[in-house]
Length: 514
Image 1 (cartoon, rainbow, N blue to C red):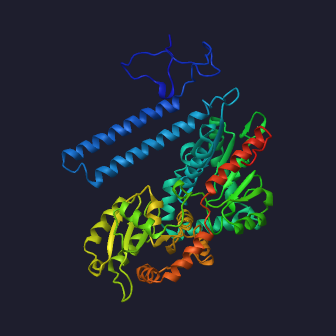
Image 2 (cartoon, one colour):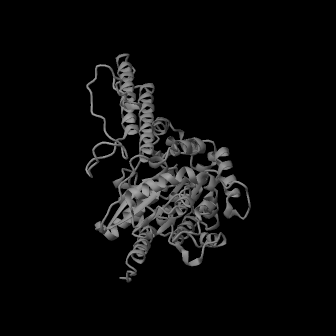
Image 3 (cartoon, rainbow, N blue to C red):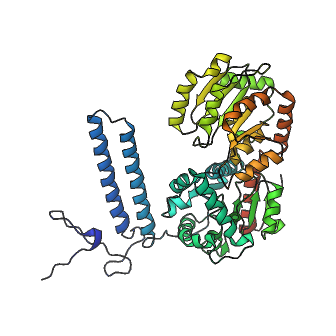
């Protein structure tokens, strides 16, 4: 008699105990109960492979430990690479298994509203904006609204988007080419091209968005990423109880936005400025579709008031800083990107001119530990220290609102979130770098609104910062312009608009103003 064989990953190894074969959906055998889950051969196989990969990584690290190099960069990088590979293998299993085990819809009436915020953590403050909106919804509505933040590209597709973005953006000429070429060839640009990159990209994102929507079944969807616009609007998957789920987009750029942000099928588009509202209308959106709320900032900036001299002194003491010296705050984003090292080295060599005060320079390196370590070492022997300059090198900080309020000027790359937060604090802005393409408009925004200055030569930034700090009239001018353009409660306004969209769609009742 022929013995039945088991195909694929379920083939037993010699000597292993026999197991009963589980029937798959649609096969003969005992029917499945509601408690039973369909077999997941792809996911189980991936889990086994992931375990094996991690085991190999651990063995490698242990061997390096024996050799006395367990804590070297080689060992750490090996462990990180194995973990990344394992995570990607798990993603393959998750995406592949969806075809066999789609999420089961939730029946019955939802006890509370759910908001799904979709994003991709590819720089530009997308994750920070998502967290800010989530915090605002929590602050205003507590447990009445459940918020889920989903990284569509990383968690629901096979795109290694974060690593691709970091690689592309590390070469400004390449990223600028990608950004500007997709901008010109998009259908909303007014040009007609055979291949619209947004539409070509759609099929790779759409299935992931469908899975995410079916899994969470939200009452409202908020996108804070330009890639997640046309694909979500092209699908009928976001239908609940016979109605389309309201879809809102929050633009996280300041000066000018890529055409991918603007989709005429949106229920609401939230933009930071009136100028961008005009841009949206030229690209086909109706005025009633667009709300000007500002750029969502972190909770610590929602109720920031003008820092008095006494308040600055209190904050300096709390942060362990010199209470008398003016502060130049150097930042380069959460990853310590751009020319931050070169600019910091300029401050290390800076000798104040006659009549100029010495500065206290605070350098925030974000999660870039290598940069923090090397700059801390350089600061110990900085020539400027002999002229009264004081240096403090920090890593990642969670209280940026306090550091900004304590400072006199901020020296930064042209990140939209940093600019918006500096405006909330009335902090003059000195820009030294921008990411080609998407941040160029932010430089224009700062210059045209008189919020500060653009200083492209990194070696001259320290000298100009010393001149600005020594000019009280100029500081006051920049301070007033920043406060005029500040929208500290943007996240709260967006949260209120979200609740209104939910009520209009699911109850037909608009919440009355309190």
